[in-house]
Amino acid sequence: SVETTRPMNQSSTSTTSTRRRSAKLLGVDVGGTFTDFVYWDGKALHLAKRPSTPIDPSKAVLSGIADEGWAPLEVVHGSTVATNTLLTRTGARTALITTKGFRDTLVIGRQARPYLYALHPERRPPLVPSELRFEVDERIAADGSIVTDLNEKELTEVISRISRSDVEAVAICLLFSFVNPIHEKRVAEQVRLLGLHVSTSHEVLPEHREFERMSTTAANAFVAPVMARYLRALEDGLSPKQGDSIRLRIMQSNGGSISAA
Image 1 (cartoon, rainbow, N blue to C red):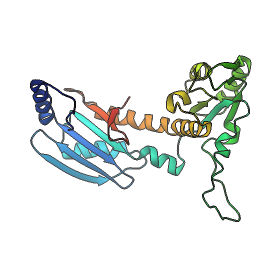
Image 2 (image 1 turned 120 degrees about the vertical axis):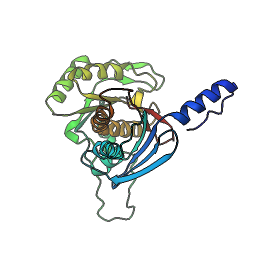
Image 3 (image 1 turned 90 degrees about the vertical axis):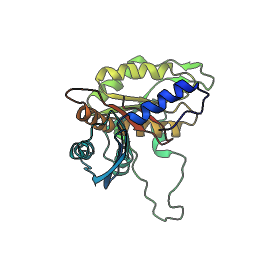
Image 4 (image 1 turned 180 degrees about the horizontal axis):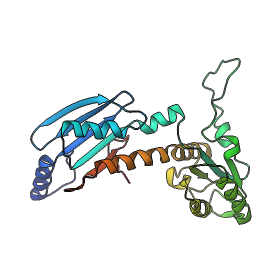
């Protein structure tokens, strides 16, 4: 456990420390080859390792806990599932909605070339193919003012086309939505009626530069359904039939952790 650096009175620090030491904590790291476990039973550390199960990574975690006979009250979990999903291009079929005239931003990027002197360069295909990139007529200015109102009729047509496209997720990235997300929120509201996962750029990466915002939002939409299924299976498997509930937390790249939700 990591103690807070904020000033605390002695009694609260002692209580927190005692509770941490007595809790049954499990740390799990799922890699492409092995799944590693570190278990604190309140008195001693226990280590374990087993082969990962790439098709369903939760199986290695759950079977490892069962085989060792552990009963954690809290599980902190690190995983490369999202990274591997991006590398192997095995994420959700994803659509993109953007401002009219900017559907190819995802392909154009910053014109950076991975092989500067290649005579016959090949561009890696984007996460969202051309036929699944849609435009709506709208425009927000750099100061957040509305230049062109969102065309609701056009939005309805785009949503109808998406509903027939057999997609699981939709990324939404409109110009200057990080300054004023009113149009992006409206588009997301209508897309969510289809029951699809929605990633909006003003929530995922509310910063300037449309390519960075668009590519990050598309990546988020691409991996989110995969992660949702995985974490749901893990949570269901960890839920005890009786007794104390198990708290599941997910490691972030900054070293902290967040709830599975």
